Length: 418
Image (tube, rainbow, N blue to C red; front, side, top):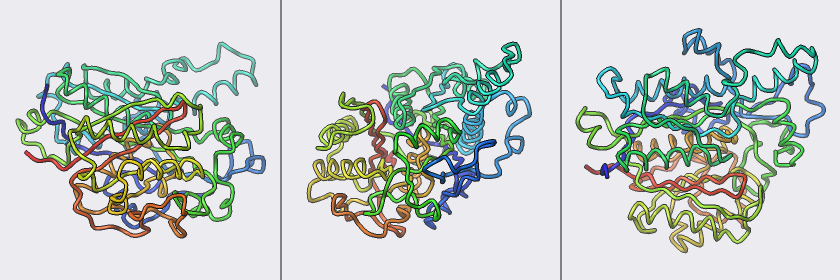
């Protein structure tokens, strides 16, 4: 056992900002990063039901990475590299002074290298020249490409793996990183969530699933509206979040600044449906209870919930019902916010970016607004929701994340007490 597991570094790349400072300022302003998709060359948007997404505009990888790194990896791995680089710099960790075999990398990714994947398969069928497929096609599209390249970039030789559980991927990565350090297998774990799947095929797939918002194609900033009565589906997003986790003993030894403690984690399966959660909310409630039990805290100690809250009709109502089951009348006293209201649903990156927002909420005492929360839905009766910044003394928080495949994750993050 390694005692407390703490967060010492943060990094983010998102539709509302590249870098933690820019991201957090926009989040507190309640600014939406959702915009209209201009088209998927050579496809116009006419054939797509939904026409909006949380896009990162003007991202130039060469501004943040060396040319070799930028050219050899997919867009999602570029995001992972940039977020991890910021988080490590923020942590003050000096790799040259560390035992590299005690530094791990755990990444959560839902889709992997879809940008290159779609491009290469299209070119293969059009050209019928299999010998011209990109020589790095296989290592670039594999789901563990980001974890591999992050480890190589920083010389981290400890545990290295990728978790892919759709929308809960990087919440599980956070939990697994905590366990890895708890069990003494590493002193530090660079934890990342990344996805970049706003591509012609993936976007078409989600449209065909009828999971995306279509009502606000002409008002993109209003499309992602978790818990609001007028929500009509989620908005796809892209980006990455990174958190440096380490044992408190290791952090103290190097006199690191500590943001918060990752104190508990739970992973469950509803074993119910590939896409739809159980409508009674029971399994989500169980997951939250297990995470709190793992952290050794009671329901009375939770002050804030960073909700999964995708902006779907069923999903938001079920999560609200589960929160009510767990916290009962106290649910009205807990601050709740939905990071996806600002940036859309970043799939495998969602848990990590939500984790960054949760840590900042604890660290700063400010809970970012839930954008577009204009008309509360009686089916989502959570009085701790707000379209404005909430000033809260947060001692402990829950991060929720639920994924396709009937998959649930919950992480407890709390104020660090030495």
